[in-house]
Length: 180
Image 1 (cartoon, helix red, strand yellow):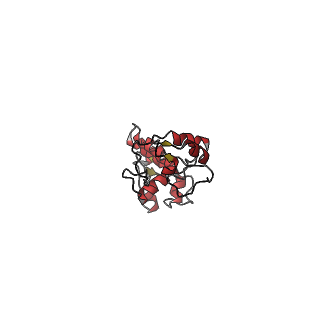
Image 2 (image 1 turned 90 degrees about the vertical axis):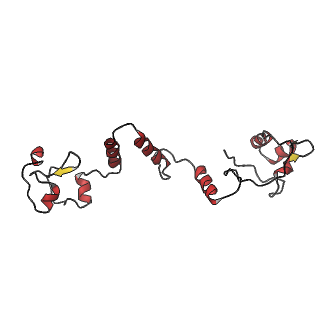
Image 3 (image 1 turned 135 degrees about the horizontal axis):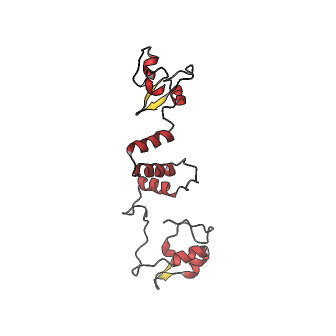
């Protein structure tokens, strides 16, 4: 967990190191200085940090990596982790949507149900509206009884497959009897 210091600018230089806050002779925090520089809740957190008995020399360490060295990749990951969580209903960052789909794909239900749910949510089921939008059907075709039969085999009212009707072919019997 990372904490952001919100204390106002203090009376110590901005380029100071942590060692300026430590009494090297006692091996303890300079309590009065810490309390003067930081807000009370920050000072409490700082004073709660245990100090090493041998007080090693200060050095910069990039905490998000295991080796302590900065990398663009680790900075990007940190930036992504620190982004504010989107409110419910807002999926602009994709995390809520990603979790939703992970839960759908991990459900113990038949694959065809999962895929149907995905197609319904993505609005790609072969409804008349979608078929017209994708120019599979013409808007001029009205009163046409489209049904999804065994998979996605579509037939029209006179019994011919939708694709066959568009190409002018005639088809008698077969699936057409299911629609009538």
